[in-house]
Each structure stands twice: as C-alpha cells, then as structure tokens.
Length: 206
Image (cartoon, rainbow, N blue to C red):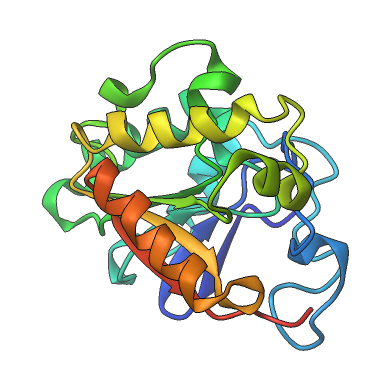
C-alpha cells in the first residue's frame, strides 16, 4: 500500500481514493508507463489509518523534501481531519524544519465536510492548489462530473475566496490542452476576482 511517495524532490501523501468527481482528464483512467501514475500504483486496498500514515512519514527523511503534498488518486479533503492531525504531529516533531505543506484539491472541502474548514487550514497549510478546470458551471460539470452537479462549481469558487483569508498561497489550476486563449484569459480574470493566482498546467498524456 503506497501511502507516501516521492516525486520531483517532494513527498506526496496518498490517504484516499475517494472522490466526488470523475474528471475526463484524470490519470486514474489510464496509465503512463514508467511514472508514478501507472494504472494501479496509487490505488489503496483500504484507507490507511492516521497512525499508519504517520509511520510512513517517519520512515523517511521528512525534512529533506522541498514540499509535502497531500494528493494521490482521491480527493484528500475526504480525510481532512486526519490530514490536519498528521500536519500537527509532524510540526510537533520537526518544528520550523518541516517543509511547506500543500493540498492538491478539487475545492469541494466544505461540501464534503459539511462545514467551513478554511479557518482550520491556518498555520498548517502553506499552499492550496485548486482545480478550476472551466470558466462556467455547465462546462465544469461536463468535464469533471461532480456528484453535486453545477452547485459544485460555485462551491469551489467560494472555497478559493474563503481559503485565501487563511492560506498564504491559493492557486487555481487549469489544463492547457482544452482551453482557447480567450478561455485562459477568462480564467485569469476569475482568479483575480477571487484574490488568488492562476496556474496553467501542461496536459500529461496518460
């Protein structure tokens, strides 16, 4: 069971395969031979306990990485309470030597957890990378297929705006392959209106 894994000098954390989206471009639909994203490399036969995840961390030289990233094949905020517990445990052990912590997320944490979780991120999470993916709710649903339908798009935008009050780096991301120059510019405008940054990611052919 792969709980922590290395990628480009960062330590990634795989806590869950649960996700409320089924994005068309998701790497879990295919395989990229020779990379961490092989068809089954990150599938979990069961959810690891928080203690198992902590043991996986402590089996590594945690402070040698440039960043700790909660990611994997699922939406990490399904395990938000355990995620924050892990960050607190690591901070207690390593203090200021602990690398910055990032969450790669679809931005549905408040929907998933039924509360505003943003204040809980303060002092724990350095970067939130939120998948914007589209310029409107209809296109978002067609691309990402969230179980909550079009309401998930506005919830994601609201989460980004709220999170920026508590997290120093909030970044919306899009994939360049399916976007026109005009759509990319509109995404920049959306991000600016929310008070966050935009990152245009290169498409990875899986």
